[in-house]
Image 1 (spheres, rainbow, N blue to C red):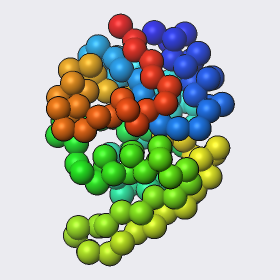
Image 2 (image 1 turned 45 degrees about the vertical axis):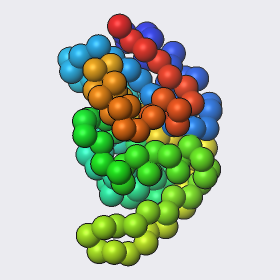
Image 3 (image 1 turned 30 degrees about the horizontal axis):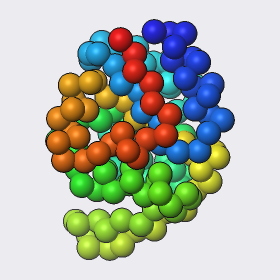
Length: 137
């Protein structure tokens, strides 16, 4: 698993777009998180944190969980479609937030178990928004 992740990160860091790593279980997520943190990715827990990190032109990693918020899906979709700018309405404050970033420096990497991803994809087609996908079993 370690070598597969290292190879994936090497290629992913040379591309623009959302990355997706699919693992079998939560234990593999823990291992992947540790390695990803060592490669200058910041782990975040929600879409607001994710936008703050991107705005600093830093790479970010988010572990997908079911249910996935509409805001998080919108961030993922816009990252892959708009190249350097995300606009999202904060439903709490009702303020439209615009975040600009450099997609060659601020990368978005997603991690999910296969089971979680299948549940999420009943509503949102995450794989269609991901560029480089790695399945680790």
